[in-house]
Amino acid sequence: MTTVRPGPARAAARLASRWATCRRGVATIEFGMLAPMILILFFGMVEASDIFSVKRRVANAANALVDLVGQSEQITPDELTDIFTGVKKMIENEDLEAVTMEIYSVVRDDEETDSIIVQWSRDDHMTSVLAPGSAFSELQDASVLKQRLSVLVVDIEYEYASMLSTRIYGSPVTIAERAVRIPRRVSRVQFCPTDEPDECL
Figure 1 (cartoon, rainbow, N blue to C red):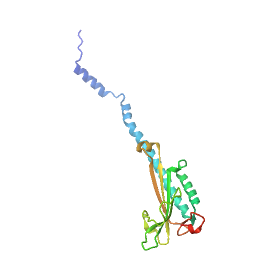
Figure 2: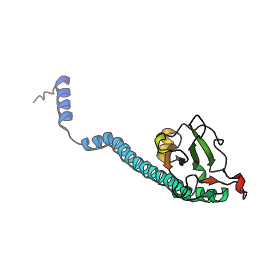
Figure 3: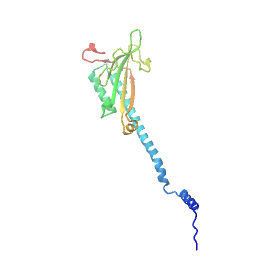
Figure 4: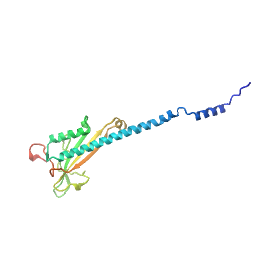
């Protein structure tokens, strides 16, 4: 009895038909295709949540700083340094250098120009940011500043470094917040570099 073997074309067609109907390993292939997107989505949501939480901490710190200074009639470098240190720890307990802070007391110029000028300013290293009398153009709503009154402006920047942001962006994410407040007890908070009242700004 002679056995007739199928030709190469028929064998190839049969093999292709079996391959098309075979479902083994499909789930593995689909998981391999979807896993990277799922992981990116998951870690992206975690990173976004962390950044949102840090942004709220920075905003709360800015409001706390401007509020604490706004309760004073006069403030000294030592007192301001203590406030800076405490507020920094609201944001970051370990790397305090990742946080930079600046505070300005701005007033309306009593001269003819009626422009907004700096009464005094300091950063978290007790360095004057802008000289007294310098123009201050960064106040968005100038209507809040009336004659013979002052406004305290606080700027905080935090270099937030997470494993994901450092790997993706190559550098920390800068989170910046500003808080503006009118002093509570006096029209203008004075900054006194020394114990001499005449040197208060």
